[in-house]
Image (tube, rainbow, N blue to C red):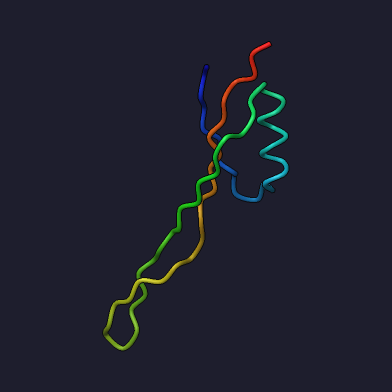
Length: 64
């Protein structure tokens, strides 16, 4: 069973990513979201705040 990770590209919808997976012959088995943080300096204090996320799907190949 072959596994592959698919990342939802910037500007791409989740549905479009799932369709791309299907065209390559894969089906999703797990969804992983990772937050993206950035450092912001306010009044001399540096704080970390979320500014986005990365969505990845782990998929397996559909074998006939």
